[in-house]
Image (cartoon, rainbow, N blue to C red):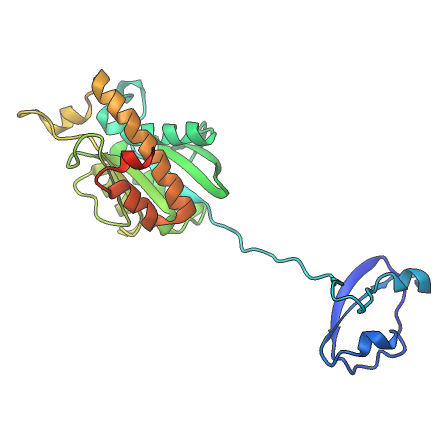
Amino acid sequence: MKVTGASIVSTLRFPYNYTLHQLLPSQFLSSPSSLSLSFCYKRTMPQSPARCSAAFSSPASDAAVLPSDPVVKPKQHPWLIVGLGNPGKKYQGTRHNVGFEMIDAIAEAEGISVNTVSNKALFGRGFIGNIPVMLAKPQTFMNASGESVAPIVSYYKVPLKQVLVIYDDLDLPFAKLRLLPKGGHGGHNGMRSVIDRLKGSRDFPRLRIGIGRPPGKMDAVNFVMRPFNRQEREELDMTFQQGIEAVRIMLLDGFDKSATFVNSSKPMEQLG
């Protein structure tokens, strides 16, 4: 076996009793275990003994560190966070669009621009902590939200457990949040469309934002299209701050911790 010059460094492992006595001083072969041998080679000219010997660390010190292969981490799938709503100025600030508003709040807090168009949605990519995320606001109108969400999930190969859908809920008290790991559509047409387009799968988390019940005999359709008054807006802004924190906890610490934070009786006290 012949060791030649040095321009590329490689690491090989030999049994301790491999015939290397002509290559290495005896002290490198004294340990009855596997030996990590770093050597260099060059295709054209032999390496000089002085430079070649510099490639080896003396075993006299236990502090000698031999090179190792870099650790390659598996590619991390991004999260997809979707807020449901209706596009256009006519619907801005209405109860049915709190999903859009939550996405806007998250985007502002995390410095993510949601200004490109992808699969019929306003779309943005960035990070929350060190976790890659995609934010989306489908522009298909509420009742056809799945026509946007499902293609995004398919194109980016997002696992359903990493698809968070945020939407309004008539059955929750105003400004109340509820985080669930999965479930049905509960009569919400936007969620109905998403589930249908995901081939009936309900196994994805959702963050529901309470908008309360319509007063008196007001029709629910008219109620969800109403804007918020000043007092409601102030309360809702606090809810958005809670939602931002809930998303951070879910991505960085796991769903269970986030659900405990959101679904506790007094979650706002935890923000202090």
